[in-house]
Length: 137
Picture 1 (spheres, one colour):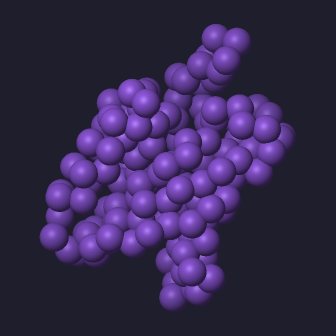
Picture 2 (cartoon, rainbow, N blue to C red):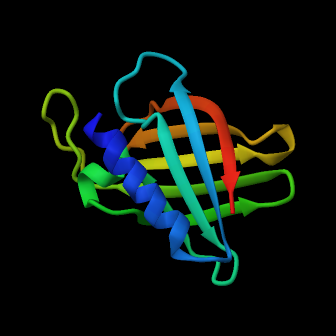
């Protein structure tokens, strides 16, 4: 609950940060067992003028207390893919991971379907989630 309130505040800050920005609010569910490494709500803010991208979710807000920069990998009429990294987070066994890499693909042509992948540095396996995004301008 605490993370939901903080996440909501972070998303509101992102929404009000730039008038020419587009914000995707994605609600996803894990593809397998929920390990807590992928948040159920992810906010992505893209400034149309500068191309700057901010991303926010419960994990980011827990680690950094504010949205962080992300990188656009692909942005076409059909698909948007961005990536970002979170460092210094701990798993359920209190083991600190030096770097966790995230990638979200939003399939615009399929009703903004979201596909999320997460992989900890040094591990070959990845975690996944999928869901849908709503666009707010």
